[in-house]
Length: 329
Image (cartoon, rainbow, N blue to C red; front, side):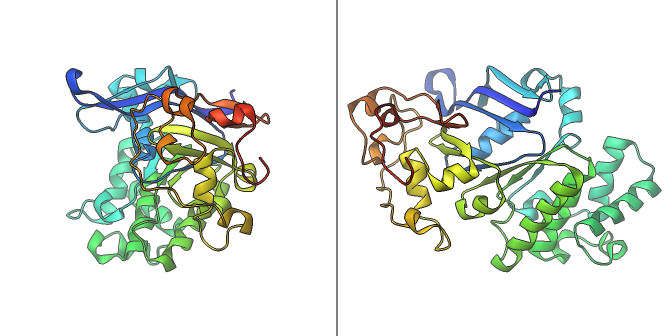
């Protein structure tokens, strides 16, 4: 059995017709090991969520995703039949979305929504599905589950709704959980509880978790590895400890300089990123217009991800001649 539960190589996503097609994700490659917590970070529009949605073939109309390989547990996700893919979604790969209010059906009770998942994937009887739904709500910390099953989403707080969506995601007993900005829509006082809940469930159930976020400070606490994306491309992929101690790519270093005051002092002094629009279709490095270290090669030739130090990948021409600066580089 391979150590990697998910292995993606050369994933690209584009929108539009043949005459006006726009590429928004370019040549993304990464692996996720079983039981690992992988963080995917980048500013809004960097392609984080699109990359995850493409693996479950949930992209909006007009989008086209292609990959050299998109293997989940040895199966190519892009070549699965609709029936086989239906069995993977929710059953083996589950997603917790950013906004629980829009993820839940407002006209169905919580009990109806959870038991539908159970009856779909396990052909459970109504009695067994309801009993399991009570267990799931209990496991995510919702009090008085029998009562809550009869209620509707609007009768729950934001934090409780997100707990319900986590319970629904776990209903299929998945092996891979994609947490797509699961705390963004919540009050700051509730965010830590949701993160702690997902971490506890990961330990107890042996889940592999992909955290999609723009919060580097969060990933410093929870991720084993971090994938940094910019303008639809991976610019750095490193163990979390190495990324936070010695980021290699200029974009990663500047992001670290903008995180909260609990960040290491050496990472707080980085300069801000100029407000220049990113270009996902740039011929060279998409970060070049905003990079103080960019040179002619950066603007004209796209850098490829190379391995540095055995377990870190980065895409930056300056690394080849050792001219990149920063802590530990």
